[in-house]
Length: 411
Ligand code: UTP
Image 1 (cartoon, rainbow, N blue to C red):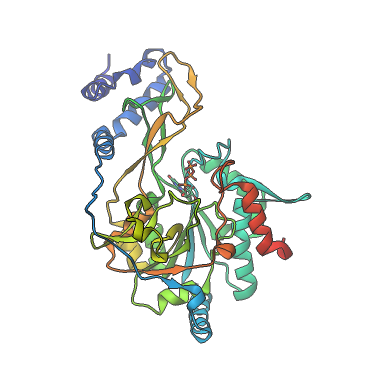
Image 2: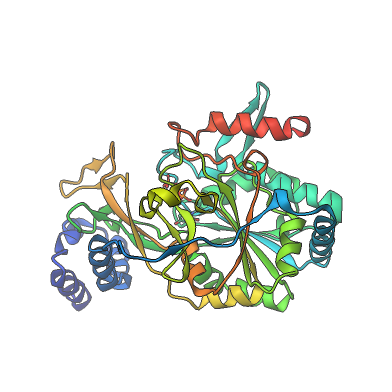
């Protein structure tokens, strides 16, 4: 038996995970190498530490919870708005603004067999548009206005990268210049079954999935994009998800407001509705900016407007802040997710309910590293219509209705 195999077996035995080699002796030579090198590269200590920390997390019932300062877009005076707009438009025209879309998620709640961004909405009987195309429309409209092709960075995962890139190719990059669209792949982390053990995806592969949208910073740096942005004198970087069909990816008002302020980062919020009782809200917790569960609020605070501002995954960073974030070590959060895997009998387990733990870094964990930030409350009907699942509220049908109310004339 070769020494490499023995070392890997020893590593696994230390954590009682040697079952991952159950099919090893029947594998082809190449497959054996793939499995061994994957295991060599997995930081099992970190995985176990995450598992222990996440499950033992206690809630600090005595935490000091305070409101943050929000700016309500509806309260901004017209002359101020014009000033911010002009500042923002200047930044766009000078090519100092780029967009990063985080599209590396698994979209487990929608349960599609393709990347979430490829999901097509039937806007009219003869008109379908994918989430990627809807987002790309923002860039094309900006080009019409500013005669600038804004660079678009798209984070994918090893699971969905080739499907995503092929989708863009077959749709001719939605007629946006393809050299302005850049794909980069985020990192993975193994998932665990409900007993805390790693599982296989194939006989020669451990099941790993993307490790959360907070990995975007590490991945931007690792892929040389941070350096590239600095070389090109980019000053403002906007981060967004893929599933809000009313997202304003290029908003001169928001850009101008951040540029006119001393803050390094900014974020948009909408006021939560009654059914969003579990959505986390912006607050200051023990003196740092955090997102907290509304369950942590007293009855008195629950009804305050300032404690109703939810995160809509739209964050704008100045380049210095981006560099700081790229050097941060963000914590991992645990989530129960549906995942298919191969069991020890070699049978594919098809998840009907949540059956595995996934570890994710969240982009919002950067906030606590900044003393303060600009937070802009925007009108939900104009800017927020996400798609998360086919049931409850954030459904494709609801998103289509909201989209058509705003964009009907332009599709
Ligand atoms: P969500 O938290 O809604 O997750 O991601 P999801 O993967 O899309 O869907 P579920 O929870 O499994 O049903 C919000 C945004 O963050 C991106 C997603 O692609 C989406 O745009 N994301 C999430 C990543 O880029 N990487 C990740 O590892 C996770």
